[in-house]
Image (cartoon, rainbow, N blue to C red; front, side, top):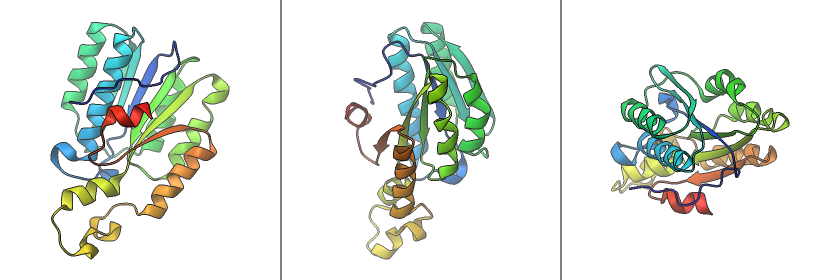
Length: 203
């Protein structure tokens, strides 16, 4: 059960969550997959923000693009949870496309919360345009390699746990995306397989 103790949104900020469900970037299996952990993270962050009487919007790039306009209160909480219960990691829209479509909806004073395992640096650039508009951004980045290795678990041959064998980004690509985010001064929390979301977000 993931609980977010202290997710540092701006003091009065409403939040818009962008949940990346592009099938090509997911890793891991079952409850410990990037998809399941990302969905739980989105639910926890939305829950926390709504309890603090902030408005929350949600865009998720599953098989169909889901867009839930920003609203507050218990009805919105129910809508968010119902929407998240129905999504799967079967999207074909890249995070870059989702952000290019969705970021124009962001209003001054809002915070964009991006949840993704993608290492494609193209999606970082649209975030850079937010700050001059008075929109903050925070990224929850899931380390796909750690999820794939956790799922492969009991394999005895180390070569079978290599990024190439698992079909996921390697450490160099992971460093490059974190560097790109740092370059644009985007606050980033890295979530690895098995790490507790609450602890990651309060660091």
